[in-house]
Length: 91
Image 1 (cartoon, rainbow, N blue to C red):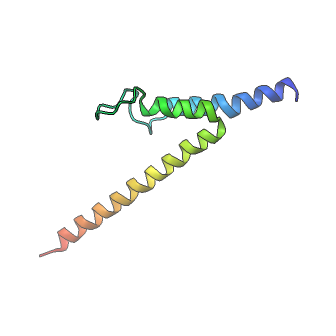
Image 2 (image 1 turned 45 degrees about the horizontal axis):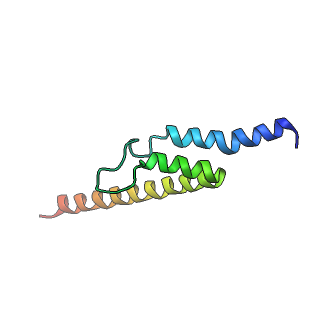
Image 3 (image 1 turned 180 degrees about the horizontal axis):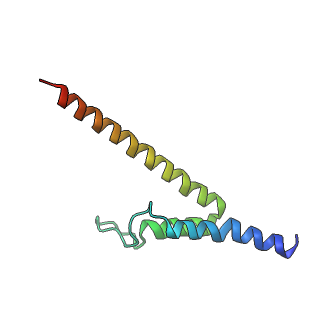
């Protein structure tokens, strides 16, 4: 493998996913949870560690979790709109 190919694999496979996770707005603020949990890491730091260790596979896991969260939010919004519509039409 040439040095250029090795650097390309490192940058595309590890550095860019780490930067994407670190700068993503989809993750909670970078502070430890206040819900009484004992983990000292924030969700953002957890995803960074996962992507650091697993590389592209960790990044795909992050992207998959974002897709699920968006689908749940869209479903909840549609359900709330249907309830409001039903309440508005009720006598």
